[in-house]
Image (tube, rainbow over all chains, first blue to last red):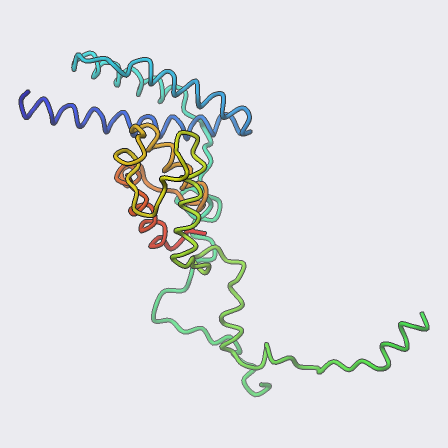
Amino acid sequence: MSISYIARRASQKEKVRILYRRALKDTLNWAVHRHLFYQDASDLRERFEANKHVEDIDTIDRMIADAEAHYNKFRHPDPYIVPWAPGGSKFTRNPTPPSGIEIVYNYGREDND
Amino acid sequence: MALRAAILRHIRIPAETSLFKNGLKLQAWNRFMSSHGDDHLDKQQVIDRVLSVVKSFPKVDPAQVTPDVHFQKDLGLDSLDNVEIVMAIEEEFKLEIPDLEADKIDSCNLAIEYVSNHPMAS
């Protein structure tokens, strides 16, 4: 059990977690209703669980590469993005003024107040 | 009609309300439709909502959930369940957590800290 083996296993585990996260989000993009999503999500989970006990490190690498290729092939063209996030519908719309700038809300109407 | 006229004759509304009198109050008010971090959550609210998300996860025993519980060590979940919980928290607070940061969140403590420090959490 060498150091390089442990490091490689750790990076594989991280890759799988991130791949599962992306795939799960993408599932929600394809199946917009919850009753469709739950079924698809449990199918996705089963596909990950099926290879849970694979031990050979090169086989795992190959499987991760295959799965990432499959994920990229079926990625949603117009995924849901939270509105304020980059690419979202509200990104850079109505931004807060930069610090150090004071807004005079009653400009030109000072005498009326 | 007669009733309406009778009521209107007796009601007087001041022409200028105090809301528009001072600029300070207006300043706090006028960005209330904006999504830019005006609705800050207080810590207790964040804790309650994160715990309720974790408790409603099907594989978790609700009695075991406390604010400083570790998902995999204490609740007996695996790494994929961890991913699912983080995604549920993300949806609860309408957040978009980058993949690498979401991967680091592995306990209630970290999740609460991340959400309460996030300016866009709502």
